[in-house]
Length: 93
Image (cartoon, rainbow, N blue to C red; front, top):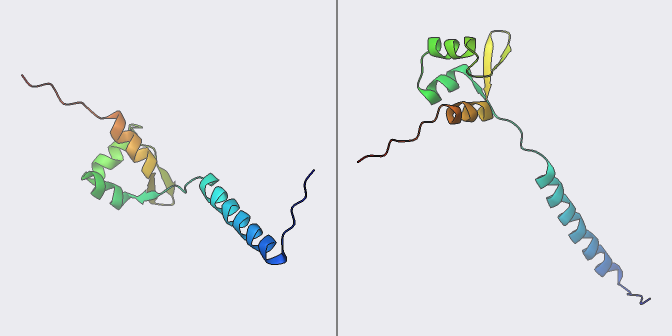
């Protein structure tokens, strides 16, 4: 077995590089934090009325969270809702 000898500075440099690599791996391994939209943001984003948003919630078309009187939607649920209601364009002749 062959031994490799480092100076103290070389060892510190190597350890710093390993710490940097470890922190990059950890930051990529952590899942992204979910973004929430308030009811007003949701209505503005989809250009719908308060009544339409309420109807969609009542019919179970869009998932939501309610804290007191405040309504929140996960941005991922809004994306899913839009994809589920996506219609491809008709082929023109």
